[in-house]
Image 1 (cartoon, one colour):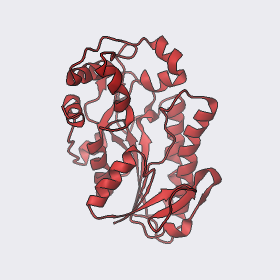
Image 2: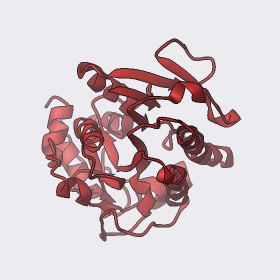
Image 3: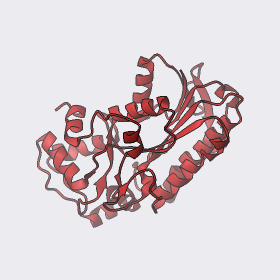
Length: 299
């Protein structure tokens, strides 16, 4: 297949390109001005609302992963604007560019997020659940809605609501490893908040699955079928690393340290269920957290 990818240099994009390349697919990257260009790159600039639309013709698949890192530092007003604009404006630019094509792609897969559901305690959240409240929920709702312009085309749109991605390099897990290895790991707040996670290998498998499975469209929860509480996650990571996990961090300390991001990410509880994946026959490589962590960390 001919596949176009945005966010190709990110954590997920790097792994996805390696996987696509092994399957001998033809990969083209969406790149920003000033980045390397060539026959395998198309320049776009969401901040200037520009894209080389003529070169978007005749791709079989578009995978849209680009977006500002939400976990990079405190959320200033400017940071929150970048979080929103990089997702909503970028998706709108790309979707509108594809809409105007004579031959649009067969499938458009966008990376959305479980932040769509907000913080919902221990409520189980399949794809049919209503959106939540908060900055990330509002941004994610706008982000997904930016693809609605493709509803009048032949392109099948899949909105992957991705949970916490566990990978050997980069992402949330890499930030946890040092304090845990030093014996400073512990639960956040009460520890009762649910964490919906996904192993990188499964996320890549899910992307292949939704591309191939024409019955899947709209929101698809890209998470393990076994979400865990923060307390359970902490205990399991400590077990795998053979380190104590008694250094709990109170909620007020988290709020002092990272501000609004504490409630939106670290203390948020989302018990997300991959109902559509289960119904479509996707078989998870890692549904058990301990087995996933042992594989990812080589233990």
